[in-house]
Length: 330
Image (cartoon, rainbow, N blue to C red; front, side):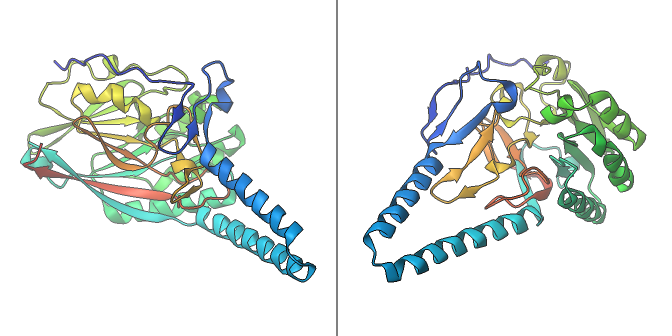
């Protein structure tokens, strides 16, 4: 059986030195548990002071052009953000796995995360993501939580999911926004379309005698997660892929021997500029917030998701096809 070492303690109420991000205290209200970038705040303050000083010191004939150029830059940034939120990137990621059974070499998984259905652009992004997914003919499709923001959008979720399928099935987990709406109703819609919801549960698929275990971790934000239960009774040498909406639980998952964890939740910060990093990150997404990274011996991929803020900069929405490849490196 797989046994896990005690997970490292997560530090809260501290500053993350990578991006000057301030972690809130544990006592803050749950919906406002976000980590805000002090780099962005300092940059905004510096820009304001620079503009104010220039307006005072520059001759009058330069002040109007300066104000107009600043306003123009703001409009361009806003339009860019609106367009990026309505764009969609089709990502392809290769996951090298040591000692991967030959039958699983080339096994493909499409991940779609964080629909946040409601705004018109989120519906369009999801429709495009599902159309692309059908073309890929993946072995598995996984949905990593946050389907809707409000109950009034449940019929939209029902309509969008009707064309989703994969060779070995489609599986889903819940996110924090699903708990804030109605997990029972969301679960019923998923089941209606043949999508199996995993809540601290595991399933396996067999390819030419080789098994891949798929494990779904329930919502960390709402303290519904139970990795020990979800990963129990799995052979120690098994190939394990874990679905967990909140990425920071990777520190707790990695010791169980999983080869890959797929997460969402962070939207990569919604706004991310080189040198400044992400503007803000949600609770349980402070440490790992974007893309492919290594956590111990496990790979972690954090999707930028489909929906969320109506504006994005440097964090274009995505749907991702991941391919497992046998590797001799450990």
